[in-house]
Amino acid sequence: MIEEQIVGRGLRDRRLLDALERVPRHLFVPPSSRFAAYDDAPLSIDFGQTISQPYIVALMTSLLELAGHERVLEIGTGSGYQAAILGKLAAEVHTLEIVPELAARAARLLGRLGLDRVTVHLGDGGLGWPTAAPYAAIVITAASERVPEPLLEQLAEGGRLVAPVASGDGAEWLTLIKAERGKLIEHKIASVAFVPLRGKYGWRARN
Image (tube, rainbow, N blue to C red; front, side):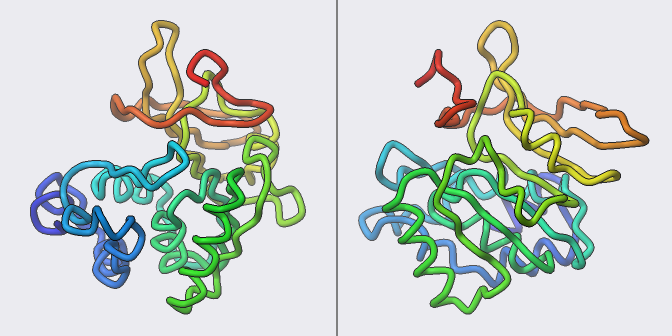
């Protein structure tokens, strides 16, 4: 997986690769899908949600440029896999999940793996987690028509936010937003397809 899907596509940061090596991806997918856990594809994880393909997890993580001291917010815990990778790379990770069953499942697994830097919260991800704000990095793992304003407000100066954002024609773009000198600078990275964001700021056309 790492050599062909990650390094083979140009991602070579050693800290990122080490994190991918140390997190057992097969534990984050349903038992019936574990034979495909390391394939180059997303997988269903119940409740209409998915675990993203390994390359997309790696790409989104790399765009955050984590050095190890940051406080990170993730929106859409899902299986907990992205949070686990972040937990290997940052000092503190808060992850929000709107589906109670998924939040509970991810919290149990992350705890079992000793990832005590990660805290799972049950709630509407579009509202963020202001208690621990501001965040040096925010990653959103569900698509919306625009990045929810509360999340932009919780991004620290100099911080980075990565999210799939819909364009006018309904296509989705993995988008990097940098907070620089009081401005938000946006960069489109790659065409993607994600499940829709749910909650107050959800993508109603897809929901």
